[in-house]
Image (tube, rainbow, N blue to C red; front, side):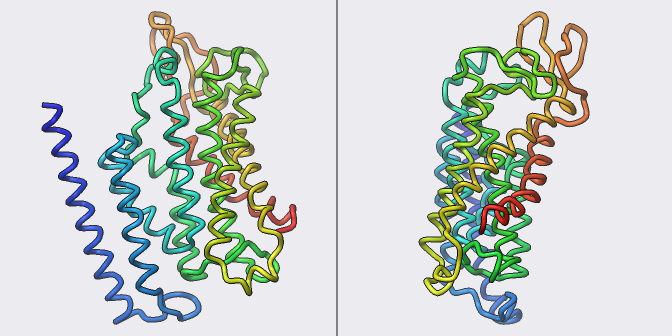
Length: 332
């Protein structure tokens, strides 16, 4: 039965990939026939760029689905997200790729310990469409705005010469570094910290797995997780930006620091939202942390206003709006 379900899921994904590739082909042909000059500078997107934006996400998503890091629904949505980010800027795609690989590794790290602490723990950390949407939705929207306003252009971060492109680029970095930093903090800090976390709003000790609970190890992990995304953005700029633009742009290595601050700040925002607007309680029978108030659950913190997906989405939006200001402040 399990094999039949696996074969059905693989077949459905294969059909989805085929439809995606064919649709991409017809979109490219239609754009050149009817909408030439779609980008802001009235320049056509090269066939190589369009093909790479189609093929590379297919390869990555197929790999992730095969390793059970993505469900079938999550894989199909990730195709669209990956396509738009790659088409807009290669750095955007590298950030998304770094987030996908490192967060999947972090989720699977010592998962047997996490299974004992969290009631809604899912082995392997497989992401469905809702998780893909909440983690990548803001970056996806920003990449669409980048395409419509700037076009398919790999520009360095330079607020003096390319303000709008730099603002949108740093916003994408903020959205993705927030998600990666929070994932590293929650997945690694939970199992690596020696003591129990403290609630970020009251500084009182709380059980592991409590929403809004932080540890020094978790905060450090969030900063490093953001640095990883910053490195990915930096590498993308070095690989694809024109030498003429790089000569007049500020030192792009500052992007790595900005990414680290995005991961750290995004994790703090996520923790603040989780501690105040997301319920955490301890099931008296199992001893596990739950997110739904019911009989037999001892309240720990938070109100039942947002769930985990909503907290991730809101924190990524806030970080995306704040990080361009931080990038400006550090001299980009």
